[in-house]
Image 1: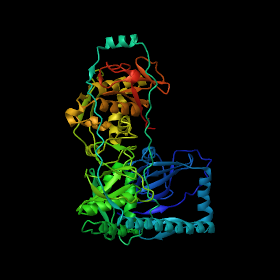
Image 2 (image 1 turned 180 degrees about the vertical axis):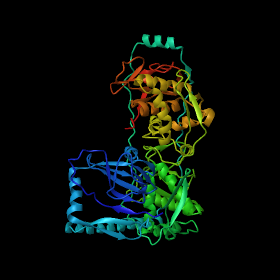
Image 3 (image 1 turned 135 degrees about the vertical axis):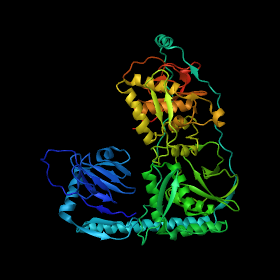
Image 4 (image 1 turned 90 degrees about the vertical axis):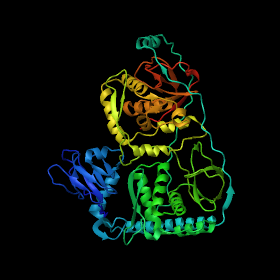
Length: 609
């Protein structure tokens, strides 16, 4: 596909005295974007064009447009593929909004009106684009551009030298290492669900309850680290012609630039052969492939685990030989900023990755204070290259953004509350996302088993499901106060889902992400608590914590504008009222029999803001 990239600073007209109506002015365009403005025919978007919230844009893959709201001093970068109104696009959190300073606006005006002229530069780049840029006559800017070019040259030299040095280590830094036994999943006695008494009796129980709060509980918060990045900025490389490779990632068609110059053959599995391949990698020929991979990570909002699997899918499409594809995957992973180690047997290459978190039920290799896991296997006993690479970082298993995958809807499922007739919903779940969750390794942070549930519960819900199911639920609880709305959500989760133990269904403990509870026919206490906590935060904006009792998981919710009624726990001096999705039919404030709130432990969840 061909793209046209046009960059231009906005001409300010000085019409500050005119009555302001919401408008956006096009500052730059990447690619071919179709526009439909009320009163005009469909056309290709133009620089300086004025758009309204009602204007329709059709943004293709890898295209983007920058819009300026001069009155609000904001710049919007719209790059999410799709067709829609400008108003909906600027409100979409997947797109970017930048608050501009007065100085920036003045600088932009000065650049265009005083110190620059326009010229066109035509050359071949990844999208065979034409770029229109402001060429400044300011000698200070010209000096800065020269400095920037020299800095980029030094970046390139530094990175390629790092690869060459690593390749030299690969020739020698191998040793035989045995695997450590897997960290077992903690086992607990199963606590069966309990059906609450009749509603009148529940009301009496709440009235008669002596409000003795639990002891101030232990808070467990999950830090979100920025994703790894290359050790230096990776410069775009000009190409005479564009070659690309198409591949599929969990039902989602993707492509990156990949030229014949990047191919290689390995042959026999030896230390020297691996080193020779990495010596070949010390070339700028691979820059565009790496850049495209990192761009896909951003566009599709891939967490570290998803990104690693995407690289695997890409490498498998590029190389039919598994050893060659593993080496290419490892190189892309390393150059993206991640920590990895190469390993081999007599005839096979493996890549080891390390995680910020302890992964359950997988053997690992202890190397220089880190636990490394075999990607795609559990081989016990390997020859491992212990050489490190500058700036490398372990992956995180936290999923902080909803992934953007192609739609593959499951069969419709009908879920209805037994107490509230209007809490009756049919839904479909993206099967591509469910397939991804199947691969997700269960883990914990800092050897704290409580954190594994927080990782699942803090994962944002799928965008399409949020737009459909959550909007449907929102319409049924509209007008209710948060307490009454939460009670309807609680009863829906308590009564619409069928309970079953993980041991019976899966042969062992397996927590669900929220979408999995909506997809699979059975769920247990931890799954219900994760789902309920997600619904309360997304629909009501209330703070929620998971409440752990030995063998059982429930939730508690903070209702700041509602009198405490029933059992509650103090978290940082703030009362959180018990809401148990497994105490079938129980009202808010009732603890399931046999659970002791005075010794409960609390996992404080993110609010999603």
